[in-house]
Amino acid sequence: MKLYTFYFSSASFRVRIALRLKGLEDDPIFVNLRDGDQFEPGYLPLNPQQQVPTLDDGGVVITQSLAILEYLEEAYPEPALLPATPDERARVRSLALAIACDIHPLNNLRVLKYLTGEMGHDETERDQWYHHWIALGLSGVERILTLTAGTGRFCHGDSPTMADVCLVPQIFNAKRYDCPLQDYPTVMSIFDACMALEAFDAAQPLKQSDAPKDR
Image (cartoon, rainbow, N blue to C red; front, side, top):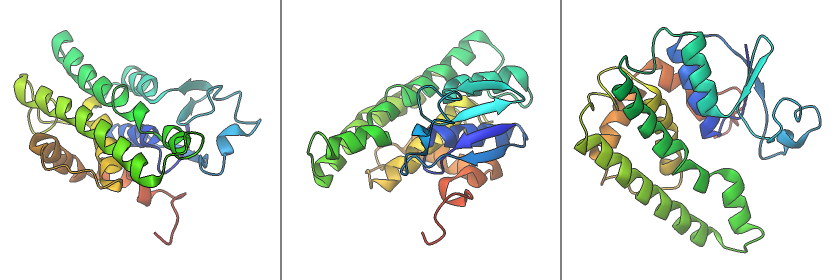
């Protein structure tokens, strides 16, 4: 199993967590997004969108982190990252999508580079953009966690699910940009519970082999 990954990619981070939770070994292949490795001709057939992550499981090639998570859940069902009943599974997916589809796309690397490049915004304006969308998104996630049934030590119940796999990388990104997080006590309690687990800790960006050693 090969994982095309970049240490600071939160989408890759999700997949790294899932692989470790399921006890699956992967051979990481590093695609440096900052150096433009994703645009190399050899990578295009694997990922026509020129993004990471890409999973190659014995010739089965899958892109998009949420699709990869669903594939891993079906191909390697134990331990499960989705609960047993349809309504619980829907709740977990809704939390995962609230992060992966509503928060992350507005704050990923290529959007931020476009803001400070072609759009001509400075770093202060970029950070203002980042903080706005993080606050709006995490406020919604906090409300889901506090107002709907199912939240336990983790986003749903007392074992990690796909929702937690999506939440943790987003909090890492928020911390990188010094976003205030005190208004999300449930979110942060779940983050701390996740980071106490080896699978989450080992998957974090600066513990990856392609991370700069001087940071």
